[in-house]
Length: 89
Image (cartoon, rainbow, N blue to C red; front, side):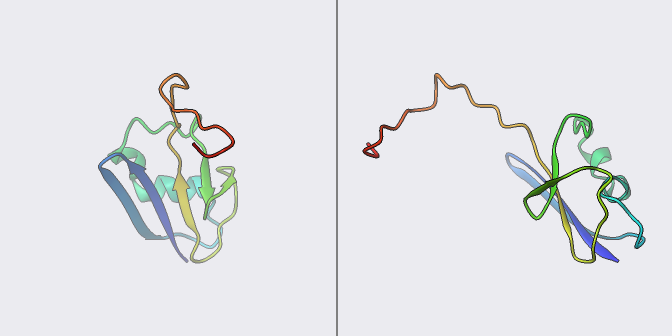
């Protein structure tokens, strides 16, 4: 079956369509895609993954047409993020 694997960083995005066996899991598909080889700093033990924006485990089963997304940690310093009051100002 065909599925997609997507990963994005500032200034660089990758979306691969690959063929996987019907019994493939999310982890199997990520390994088969080769994305971790292209982005060796990806840590699947720490980073979350999802299918169409819904968080899943690496052991999750796939369906034809699924898009696996590997999420980067969001790092924001609260002291640099402007606060908004309830008026929207």
